[in-house]
Image 1 (cartoon, rainbow, N blue to C red):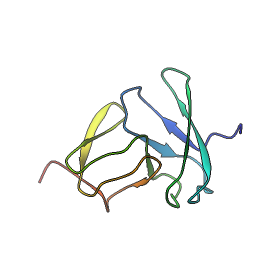
Image 2 (cartoon, rainbow, N blue to C red; image 1 turned 60 degrees about the vertical axis):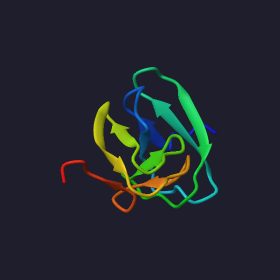
Image 3 (cartoon, rainbow, N blue to C red; image 1 turned 30 degrees about the horizontal axis):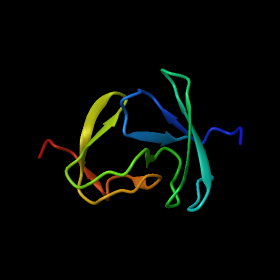
Image 4 (spheres, helix red, strand yellow; image 1 turned 180 degrees about the horizontal axis):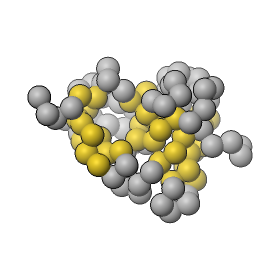
Length: 95
C-alpha cells in the first residue's frame, strides 16, 4: 500500500487528518507522520470524510485530543483506533 490516506502533523498527536476522499469502514489505511517520517497503518472503523480526523489509538471519554501538537478538545464518546473523530465525539474544553 503506497497511498497516504491520512497525515499526522506532530509525533504527540492522537488523531490524523484524512487527506483522501475514499476512506471507507474496513479499509486498511496508511498514515504518514510529518515530523518523524514514519508510516502508520490501521483499519478504518468508519467511513471518514476528507478533512476529518481518524483516531490513532483507542480514546476514552475525558481523554484529551491532540492535533498539530495542540490540545483541541476532549473525548465525549469513546473512539476506537481507526474511528471517525469529529464533533459528534469530541468537544471543546472552552465551555
